[in-house]
Length: 137
Image 1: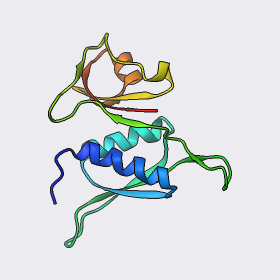
Image 2: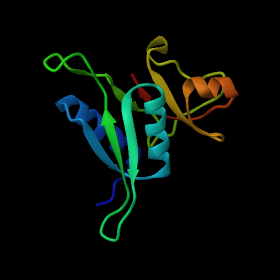
Image 3: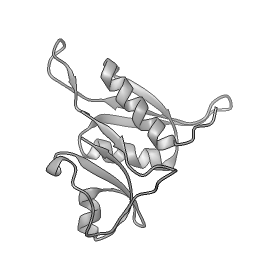
Image 4: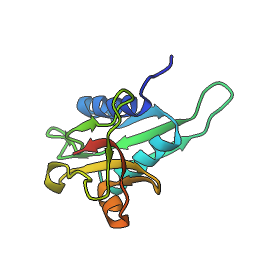
């Protein structure tokens, strides 16, 4: 089955898995999804991720370990929300001076720039703009 928006599919899988308390979630592999997972790890939203190589029977996958706070009974996901911004039907671009702040700096914007997939802070430091892929808080 083909997916129209693979990035939105990845975000929905992570959002749904964290809502029901799963420890891991698997998403189909692509380079941009691996870059998004790396940013989520660097920003502290997930514990870790790994890429599982493709075999003759299946395609490559990315396994993401989700992160929670609190003890066993009061466990809450670290990711409170995720929102896809730039969609296939409506692309959203941001210049270097207009990179959005998410919840006054409590969240992170993920951008696709000429220098690669970067968080909003990294893009501001490098002075580049690009397509705003999603917000995570």
